[in-house]
Image (cartoon, rainbow over all chains, first blue to last red; front, side, top):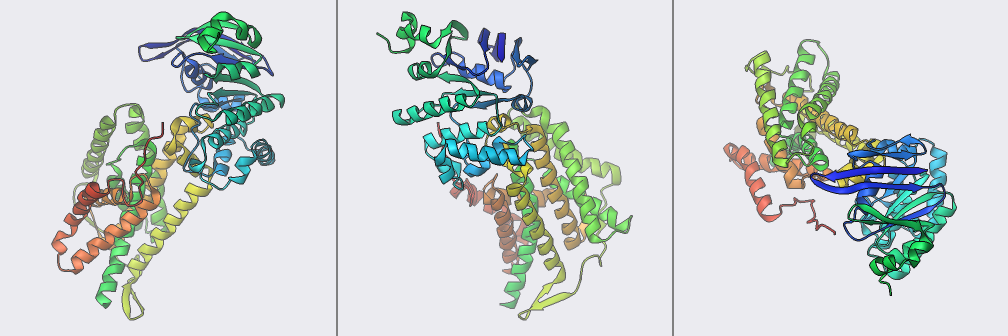
Length: 235
Length: 293
């Protein structure tokens, strides 16, 4: 579904992604784990078009999307829930969701998706008239995810959805991620919480200082000594 | 008392002109964080386009207003595309200096094309009759200015809050990258902001010409600066703030002249600027925003 092929991304002189390749098949949850600054968010931003790779290819459903503007990539079916949620704090929950469907014209479909998102996140329905800046961190995460779903993506990029949330909420968010996946949305999940990420993912990649250093099924990586030591607080 | 109310009405109509110009400053600042110092000159160009529509093409006030707004909208977009867009990722000071350059270019370009002589707006395009309300005489012109500017402000509120482009504008001004991820075309949204702000300045130019009758190529400087003060007074980047700031500044000026200090009129705006920057730098409507990490 998504093929990232040997991409190199720079911030000025800093070589942030060094020949990264990965591959996502339809229906999967793939997780990308790694330490702070390893290049996880950079990879997501490159896929969604916020950053342009200097070299390399990105194929989404056999179409070249590397270096395309985010607008086109959203239209193709990739939505990105950015790190730190980035909800539009000065707008209501409802308006945020509306913006998620910015490129769509099918009014009926949009209304249906509002219902779906409210079903998935009943909290958002309760607070739909509230300014999103007044929501709690967990609610903002739900809103950011709901907003991305309003574009009806086939591939959802999630950047650190558990960041700063209480353990109970983290569980809820991960349960919802699985639910979203079961409705047919493929997911690329970036996480520092490697334990949680591996527990829901089919496959995983490990990234270190801009390079993919390990890849495999979630179960394999969860058992690898090296990975356990580095990322799972392992014994 | 009667005179006081008359002055108050004068102040409000003058203030509503400031408010119209201030809206352009504040909307552009809200979205690209640039004080567009060429904005006062767009106002001047609007006044001239209105003038030529009325005298050359013998149009009425409202058609002239529409033509001026349309032409200024296009002009504003051109300025943005040619002068500011290439500097989108440059330092803020570079963009600011460019804005001052654009301002001088428009002023002296206008003088080069048509000369520096002033023109007199034709009288008789606006109602000259005064209306008496509760024993207070209010000029028809003041009322017309009020009606036009309030109508435009209501239209603006509608655009910003109810339309798709308005929502896109608010999204881009809050978080440009997040807006991109929604599929919003940031370049078009910025252009739309310049178009709307410049159209309002064009309208302000026409009603300013009608009110003061004299227009000339450097007429945009002082109202432009005062509108900038109004925008800062209300809280730069905040649309209702620009409206309130403009009205307040107009009233302050009118009251200063009414109190017999009419020579101080122009100075007072800058006293207001200094005071607001010392005591409430975020503006009347602004909150001290702490960055959330």
